[in-house]
Length: 130
Image (tube, rainbow, N blue to C red; front, top):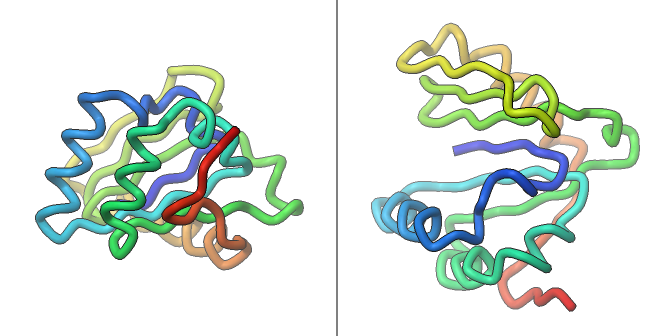
């Protein structure tokens, strides 16, 4: 699963329900790649996600965007190369979801690869926020 969001403030990655869902996904050989402009939200408000990162450090990679990409404000998640959920602006819940359609995920996956290529390491197992 590949995710991009400026800060993940609306994703509820620290919730009990999301923790359970992600643990199930990762325990079945899932991989999670996250790109953000900042990790502050996750460090401060998602201790369950930080524990998940410690427990599944081999399957989760968190990266930070380069300064040249800070203007990106959309948010999206591509799963299995066939499903996508996308918000046109990360501050708004309006967006679209497409299921079981590889052609509809091709351009977002190419865009994600281009974003990923311009990232630096972000959160790591053992990183704690203040």
